[in-house]
Image (cartoon, rainbow, N blue to C red; front, top):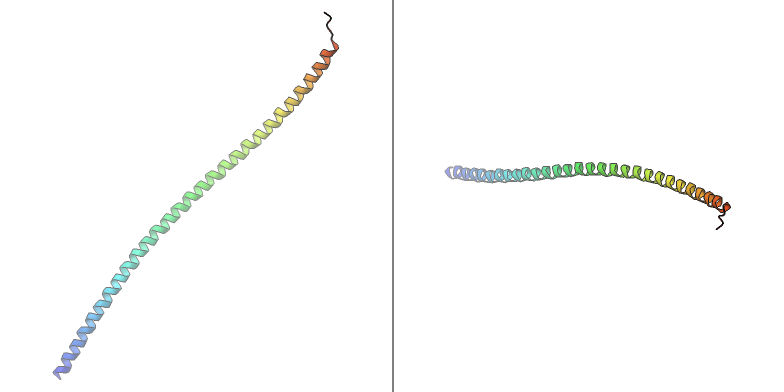
Length: 107
């Protein structure tokens, strides 16, 4: 009977030791999970910051493109105006040349 009690105690001790090892392994696994979760959190924050930065850059580029389009429109309008003025200048020059041609100066 004593041998059975000793054997039962040894089995209990072995089970306690095994349980302790299992708890220690679980603790290490949980620590690793916490560490990986923190790394994931840092990566997600970094991605979020990068996304915000990219959105701001896209808005800036969009605004610059709108400004360029406005300047291009004004430049095209100015070019048309200059072209019209040059056409009128050519007409006036031709009229003057015709008028001057009617006057002859004898030497």
